[in-house]
Length: 275
Image 1 (tube, rainbow, N blue to C red):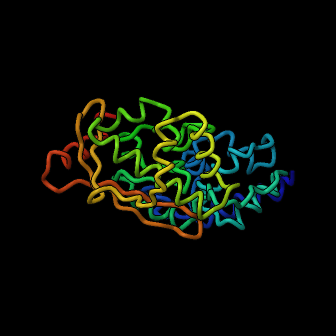
Image 2 (image 1 turned 90 degrees about the vertical axis):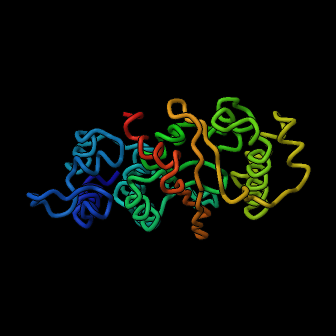
Image 3 (image 1 turned 180 degrees about the horizontal axis):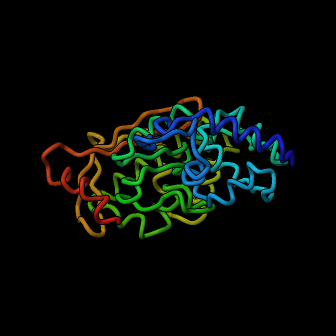
């Protein structure tokens, strides 16, 4: 571990960012050049003391998870992320097609959607990043581990995942989830994360096996509309717009509702009920 090199690299990358670059308010009396240490720690989901010790060359040996969180907080490119891992004495993450690294461009978009339910999902259906309203709407989908990181795996193995949608919509969601997974597994090959999820589901879910056998590849829902059952607000109908980042095999999902509708009012209430 190159403590001096790591500390200098973190400091330089932190100084290169402004609050507005990461979706934070600048404040009227701000004098700091770049981000503060506590702001980076907040964005990375770690304590200020932990992050500060890394910049002071006296911190612990950070784990892969901590380094990935710091890379996201500092909006590092893939090359910068790999450099960060090497400075910390870790092997660079495998640049597989599953694309867990959220690019700076995608991060900037997410930062500017802070008041909107939005999330970044990879081709295997794993949520990499959510805005606070998206967490309030759907729950923390980044907290899952193992195969359960994939929304498709959860759909076919966890009744709680299906309970977020009206029963009448289950069939169309099952078909769409399966089609997305098949499309990804075909494009990325038998060693991809998507193929791993599909293989695991074939072993445990007859319902998935039935859908898989149909070879559907049409991944769209009618009019891109989704009906969600929120535990406190009840039924919410949203439109889901999707932006593709082909280099990373990632998708930005943005949820909106028709202005003036009851669902639009409920989306505006998410912050209150989640607080």
